[in-house]
Amino acid sequence: MTYQLRLPLLAVVLFCLTSMAGCPNKEPAGQFTVVQGQVVNIRTGRPLPGVLVLLAADNRGTSSYNQIEDSVRTDKQGNYALSFTNKATFYYAVSCEGTFNYPFYPPYRLDFADTTYQKPPFTGTFTTNLRTIDLALGKKNLVKFRASPRRVFRVRVTTRATGYNQLVITNDLPPRPADNQRFTVLLYQVPPFFASTSQQFAQVPGPLPGISFTRQAASGARQDTLVRVVPTTSVTADTVEATLQFGR
Image (cartoon, rainbow, N blue to C red):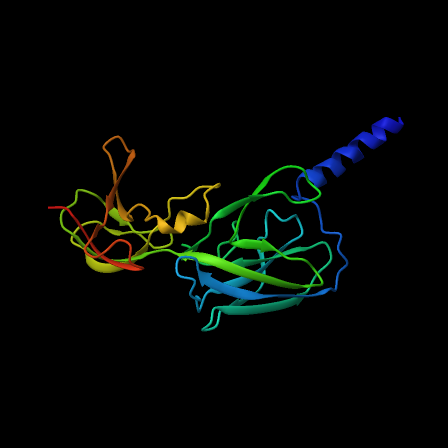
């Protein structure tokens, strides 16, 4: 009988020790906490002004952070500062542009390498994205973000008769008619890095961005064609001029 009562309790304890998801924070409420720091360009070391820095919170663990408590933009020197008094059971983090589960404005304009680390008292290895950093409550937290601004492509789009119904620029913009279009749009280049990539990820140009053209086949199935942009200036610059032409 004793073992039947203890085993479920032991399972809960082990779950909380191996994963913070679902376990409320036991830190006392009402602790005044400060987080301050700077956001810089990892390629140049220069400050990044006007970047949105968020104070995120969640009472289900440090893997979520889907509540935004406060926000501020960096000043001309890339500096920011936030302060708060914690609520009972909540974890807190500072996030540059947005948390993994709650992007503030898609798409991201900045990218961050991932890092692999060990977090005491756990013995396992954890991978985390350097966009969002856990905060120690009741203390001054100094957090410097080293971000890689995505290259901006200023694209002049020209289409004629394409044979497609719509063109889709990004998921956060409404589709446009595919034929006889002429407009200019900004596209952000996605970097080619994965979970274990080092900080040098920012030095490698990513794949060229593109625009998807969609249509319904006779069978009713959706057909997509991705047309990539054609750069007209250097692809290693922070802003790249490009064109995209499609159709006859």
